[in-house]
Image (tube, one colour):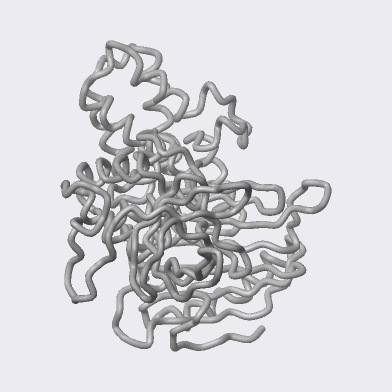
Length: 418
């Protein structure tokens, strides 16, 4: 599965509503440009695309960029100057114009913060700079840092490592396969190892489910999905599956990495799987009005073995229950013949609109063939299928760029009316 496509799905949870104000907290550091000045040391400043009024500690020049630290005095925002202005010449920006030492990781982060409105404290900047020295994809790491800032998550190693693991290029399924093979080399008489192997066999179809026929009906796929979620225990802390939490794969892996008998190779794979599961939980936002779940899991569809990444978003009713009449489900699959496929399903008042994003010319006749089946399956669940849109890029850009443009719809394709 493409690393950037997964990150698009995951970081889609990070969309900030247009009417939500940009907020600075005490102690946060930002790069801002001064626009115009008012009496009593007040000035209009610009941070990214956001403009706000703040009190400046010292007089400055209009139109130049500076590093500031936010402070609040009697409820009034005061910006303390931390450095000289940035140069106007093009090219990389030197850290000589920032309050931070010229260290590996900090320069990339500082350049990023000058372009992106991501307020961080000095301590968080140094911590993030240290993280950037340890990863092989700094761009993805900075996306994670931005997500942590906007979601107000703790700036600690375990949170960053879990989020980064959830979106990096290492396949969740490949990690499970590697762990399965590694555990085969360990004594199988250990009850804990046996339990883990049984779960991995269930998920990877090495065991009793391998020979079972999967007809590919909506009910079969759903049952397989729920079984996979149950056995992985991705959300076992919230008790979101019927399997006893202590028997879920995640819980067993946590126990396994803590025992002295665990092999170093197996422990490493187990730790990576746990991090991926933890990261998926952190991406799954849950507040008073919206329930959102994001996860990646092994799945069999139409007798094809693949890996599914899913983002499910639904509103809550005033009583706190999920409103099944209004929700959005985003799927990403990499299928054997159709290759990378994104399915965007939106439900409004139990009326379903489906948009398929795929490069293949075969998708249209296949969709038309399956339309009666899809319509009937949804009808059985008391939903009405309205329209199926089929989209592919107007140019030859890869599927990786698609999720960023779902709203702006930069695609060509056909619509199938029901």
